[in-house]
Length: 152
Image (tube, rainbow, N blue to C red; front, side):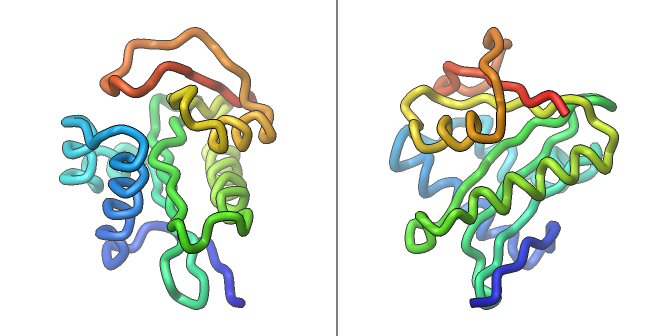
């Protein structure tokens, strides 16, 4: 099995959207802010200095995650999704490693994220990587009820 983590390539844009819509629709619903991000990926995530990573297995997109630049020292980990048929293979660990390496290369000191306490598997992953709960900031997402940060 050939597993690769690659940076954003426009040919995979639809996978980023579809994988994220799948988990959003399973657990919540797609909110207006999600649609705004999906329709403007380059403007919202990439141009300000962020990145989107894809996990490929034998050249098939298995997962994705975004890193959005908050400021010069902080990035937001967002839109982490792994295709159901590839779940349980620790691919989210590879995506997390790529995000942490990216933040360190950018000399960031903090990675933050917003999540939901309904998402036990995701929260366990974040805790495994030493993210800690912090007070919840104002957010555009109704599903977000927990904020976590990792100090690099």
